[in-house]
Length: 77
Image 1 (cartoon, rainbow, N blue to C red):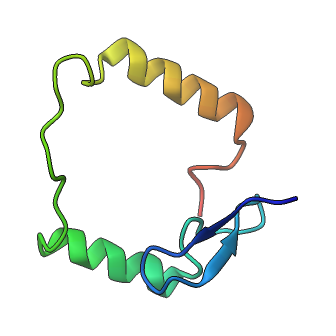
Image 2 (cartoon, one colour; image 1 turned 30 degrees about the vertical axis):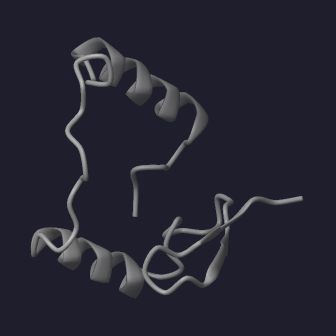
């Protein structure tokens, strides 16, 4: 059974799969609305990261390598 998530903007269900180009958003429109909300500082991260939660350069490299290996095209439009 495929995983479904709700679009953060409009709450429409989105099937989490490679063909869902804008996941977790249902469309480019919803993606841009969300980006605008962040740029206008209407969204914030509620609590700061603790040192145990902070990303290190090594952990970022590990995440990027994993995405590159498993999610071909993940960062492309």
